[in-house]
Length: 191
Image 1 (cartoon, helix red, strand yellow):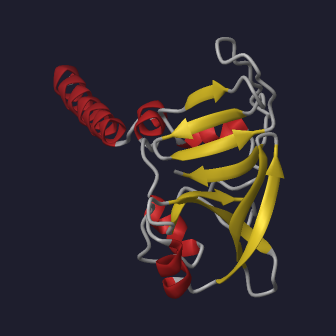
Image 2 (spheres, rainbow, N blue to C red):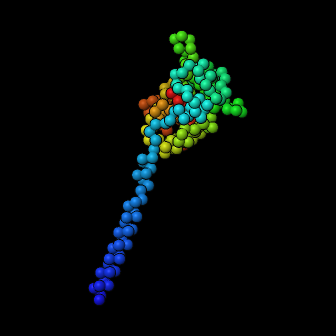
Image 3 (cartoon, helix red, strand yellow):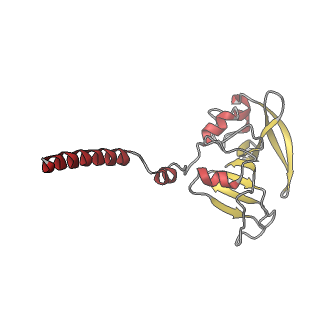
């Protein structure tokens, strides 16, 4: 009789162990989930849509941009370490600046959209990164960030594909770039 109870008890214990192991195997360890959830490219068109530039591609004539834009756009200028630039400014309904549209002049004199510099925290990447966010948040979201400095202005950029996040770090030596996780995004540029 003891042997029978031992076998029944062992069988029940084994069944419970097997059931528990099956449940444990169905859950995904958090460390593998985190690594695979990072983004390697940014949906530039989604950002342009948020700026009221739906259906517009880079290197389009500014005449076409002005015609298709759903946000107010007006001429303006930007002064930075490289000089004074004529730009078009994208404004929200209250007239606050959202972005600067940089352009180059084509061979025929046509103004062509070259860069879009997002200056407002009202516009975010599809993953939620905005002006004012720290570098640590970018590292949490993107897996292929390339950080560069520039000799002339000392600007620091964290680049993900065609999108550059200008940080508030000063790096005049591109060979020795130094950043802190707390460095903040100043502008987001679509190239």
